[in-house]
Length: 343
Image (cartoon, rainbow, N blue to C red):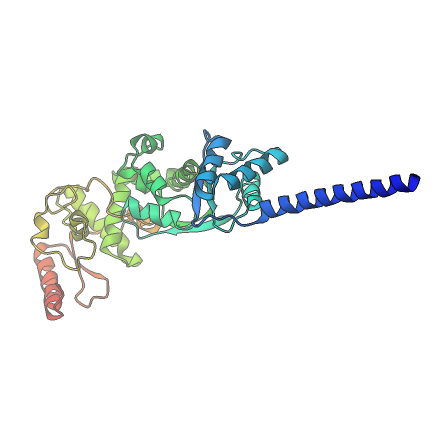
């Protein structure tokens, strides 16, 4: 009889082990098998995002069964799926366990974002978001939102100047607010007392310095003559002269491929047309580099009032103090344009 009980116990124990083993294997497969999602998608966790919000997005993209298992794992592990704010990219091959680790631990991976030679907010958003999880539209809408811009002391035109061209290490999952806060911090560190005092001595606000720097950087790519160009424009500003800057006219046309500004372009009705309106345009025509800003703040004093590209197309300019001298320089440049049939 005793043997019989032992055999039965062994059978029951074996059955239980098989059931437990089978359940464990089933659970393991469920949480480690890649999802059936066809496309990657982003989940934005903000300070008002609930766990249900996150699960609903997962269900919408990967199916209710997959989302149920994600939710169940978080319940079993007693973790909150909405613990860390930011943008989280979910790829087609991610499993339930992968998603658990992503949200439970937070995405600590970083990316280097580099931006320069940027003219528009759309271009800025696209460039920054290329290597992080945030959708470009999210950043672009923030840059176009009056309340968001006002929070940082800017409007929807000037907000782009808060982004100083450079390379920054950013968490890939960074939220919109954290990104904007980082850029605001970098901006305040750059505009220290020394730079603010220099701007005041010139008679320009920091924003006006940035606008002028954007013109200077469009006029010349040669760092060693940026301070000369800045000084020339400051001379014209002080005399109340039209700046007559071709890059501002190009910006007004919206056609950045123009290689030659013609008389018809000078008639464009726009506050950015410095052939028509005295003073600086209402905003920058590009996001200027830190170097260009510093060249304006440390401009070279001279009597120059005119500039024209050199006829050797070296990228440098001929400078002049009188209109007659400038006209001679311009004639030489036009002859070369015509000879090469550049229109």
